[in-house]
Length: 303
Image 1 (cartoon, one colour):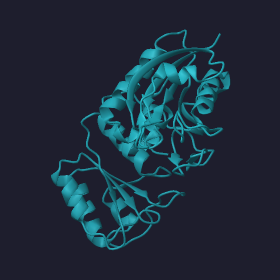
Image 2 (cartoon, rainbow, N blue to C red):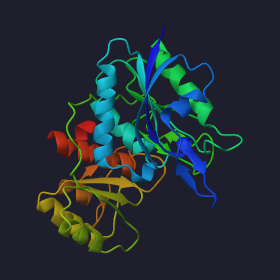
Image 3 (cartoon, helix red, strand yellow):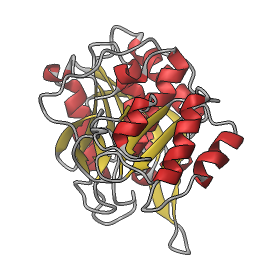
Image 4 (cartoon, rainbow, N blue to C red):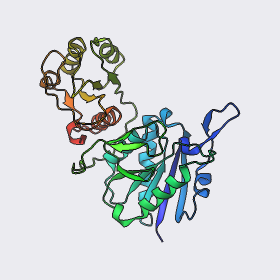
């Protein structure tokens, strides 16, 4: 019989509603599994019980270690991780950077709380367990199972705050998955995401550098452009040896770094900035953190 390791971290799937109407993660991993009909042969390990907006790089390090520990047993056929939707795409990407095992790792969660009369949690968890049990899921890297869809970790984006099919992929189907790299601790690496807007000045860049940022992700306009004043700050950061990845606030399409001007993508690229390809801000940040942690070129982790 297929054996699945279930790792739980909290999120809406583990939330109940308190007397004030506030959602809080209170449900144990075993209670999540008990709500699933026909859960196959599943073992449960509860790691945290957090809203995913509160998950830190240290928590992600612990999750990566827990996945490796689960897969150290030859009797385990796959791993399922329950996770909040706010940062599921970030965690999924981080796991995929380091996941070299053929066996699947599948993340899932829910948009409705555990005590909602029509919670999507049990159905999503059952789908994830079945996906992790499917031999066709082997050698596919880390996956997200959500709302009836299977989405590769790299390029996954939460597209809607409440729709039950809340995730999409920004990556073309034919894009190859980059090779995983050996795991390294992520905690302690400071990479902020700086949003650009028309006419943005350099104050966010300067503040990030003053706070000791090890790298920057700029959520730019269009295909990867920012205003000239912010651009001057980014160029100063690059010349000081701080790596910069440029992504975009546009929902879909690649970052191309094609335009000139003081903050144009081509200008930033000529000074060493790297375009994020099809990745949006959260995953571009995780790529840069993983690159800094492992001493790799961030371009090797992008897609």
